[in-house]
Length: 59
Image (cartoon, rainbow, N blue to C red; front, side, top):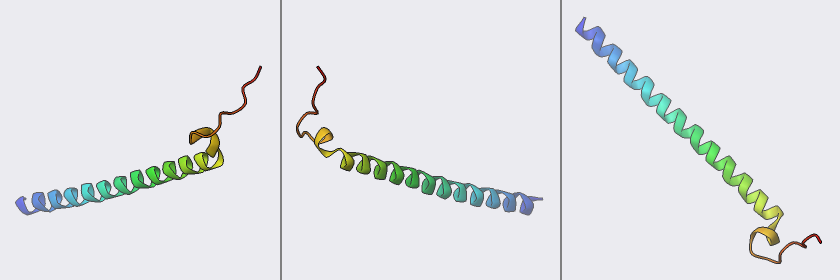
């Protein structure tokens, strides 16, 4: 019984480690995607978002 308990603990620990790695990879992918979208947004509107001339104001 003790051997089975040890084996189950090891399998659970391994599964938890795999989930941790998968979650970290998923977070990194989400951060990369958000960074990419932010860069593209700022690149598309450089004057308005990088301290350039103000857009024309409506009357």
